[in-house]
Every structure is written in structure tokens, then in C-alpha cells.
Image 1: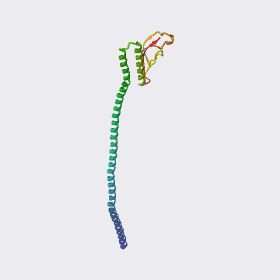
Image 2: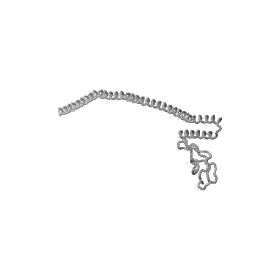
Image 3: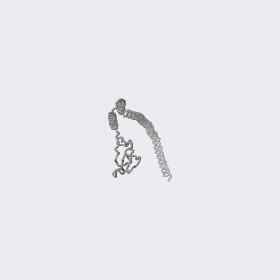
Image 4: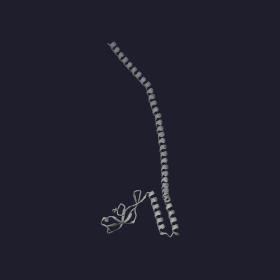
Length: 202
């Protein structure tokens, strides 16, 4: 009986020793595996750290490129704005000069007429000279886009006429119409340059 008990005790000890050996082997394997795993994780962290500066550098380069384009575009626009403002000012000055230049020949005609009238006693020649100058002046104005307004005996219209007074209409057909023009009106390129001052029949 004691022999069997001893044998069972020895067998239990042997099983316990085998289990202890297996645990030691497992622990040792885990100990050897840990440095490899740590090494792999370290490589990933190193790759991430290397990728981060590269991404920042790429973003910085894109920012610098876009900022440079913006500064160039702003500079070009500012130059364009200044140039167009100067061209507009020059155009306005030249337009005024061209308009005045167009009337210089008419002034020359007036000078010649005045000089001629000092010695010419024929009234008909004086009248004809004034008519010619007036005709030339009107052609010059029309060339610049200025046209006289035809208001006489037309229905009174506040869009074009300014009534200075009302009088009894000399004829029934002239009621509500312009019976006299005190100051002629003018159009400039189809817009009213000056309203006609008129007398309206009632």
C-alpha cells in the first residue's frame, strides 16, 4: 500500500515538474518575442515621424506657391487699376480737347466775318455770312452728337419741355401745344442735353 502511494506521489510530482518546465519555456519564448515586437512597433513609429515632416514640408511648399501667385495677381491687378484710371483721365482730357478743336474753324469764320463787316456796308452780305457760320456751327455740333429739339407746335411734354408761361391758344388746334419757343432745347446722343423753354397754348 505504501509503495503504491509513493508511486502516485512521484507521478504527481513529475506532472507538476513537467507543467513547471512548460511554463518556463512559454515565459522564455515570450521574453524572446517581446524585443522583436518592440522592434516592429519602433519601426512604425519611426516611419510615422519621418512622414510627418515630409507632409509639413509639402504643405509649406504649396502655401508658398499659392501665396506667391496671390501676391503676383494682386500686384498685376493694382497696376491694371492704376493704368485704366490714368487712361480714363487721359481720354476725358482728350475728348474735351477734340471737342474744342472741332469748334475752332467756326471761331475762325466769326473772326473773318467781323473783320469783313468793318468795311462791308452791304447788309445782305453780313446776313449771308452769319447764316453760313450758323450752318457750319450746327453741322459741327451734329458731328459731335448734339441735335436741336423741334418743339414748335408739338404737344407739350415735360420730358422735353419746360413751360415758362401759358397763353390763350391762337387756334383751337394749338391748345395744349407749344406756340412759341423762348429757348431751343438740344439732344446729346438721344438724351436731353437742355430742355426747351416754351410757351404753351391754353
